[in-house]
Image (tube, rainbow, N blue to C red; front, side, top):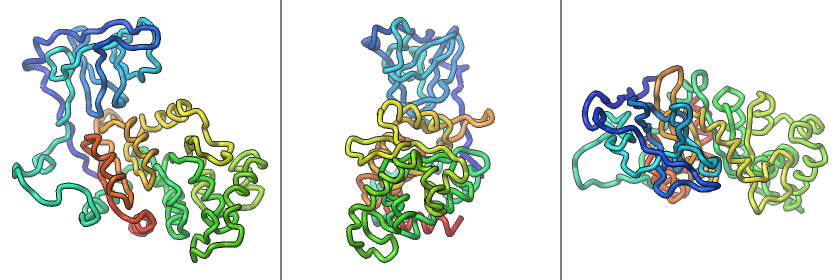
Length: 358
């Protein structure tokens, strides 16, 4: 896999040479200085002690605190009174802050200079053949040399074939961590126990009598067992996404929601605890694939930068947003990332197609 080459800034020219060191002001008790600087998704540099230093493990919409001569991305809720917070809103290098937005840009990616063109957005009419081929190459590379994070909505397990496809992708090494909510895990386990999703057969789509009890009964059984792993063992369940994750001992983060039933014991009810757990993996992520879940997709996208550093090499983080809704796909793309790819398609077809070609 050949990644776009990272082009570092030339700090041996102006305005970098004569730029002052970055300015800071102390944080208050639970709040930032008035003119705090907010991070982006791009590589950012801060001049400290006459030296330009890149922000590591970035995340958008955060503050930057200077600690021991290094810039540290810090969520505002984590800033402590007296922390040296970077201030100033210019990021062109003239004030000691530089945002390097064109770090991976090639002539091809910059595109044509034509002012008027058709079909520049992502819609149901867009061709995605190239995106699929690129995704195959990225996943084959990152299976052994990266950190692949999946973000799944329950639609991924409402169909027999897509549920099996996702489980196979996990078993074959194409997943290193999974984000979801209570619903994805619940309906995956419901499928394992009853072969239904919200009471509908996941293959024939036939409604089962009293099927609306199935997801509630599933949650109750898991809570009685004490954990998802114990339920799988107690009932000798061998299929599905949760089984594949636990069989391979892979981490997953189930973030709670105000509308959750139950929830399952592994669901994290506190949103900030869930955010912390997700952030631990977005810091390492090299590829993120978000399927049919607007809220979890946007949450993950907002804490994932457009770049990462692996083995001393700076490379893009590839983020895919896949949904049947054009709005959901373009919502994440609108955050301005260099690397977000949107695919407007049926999620069951996407997973089956992906698994077969890999």
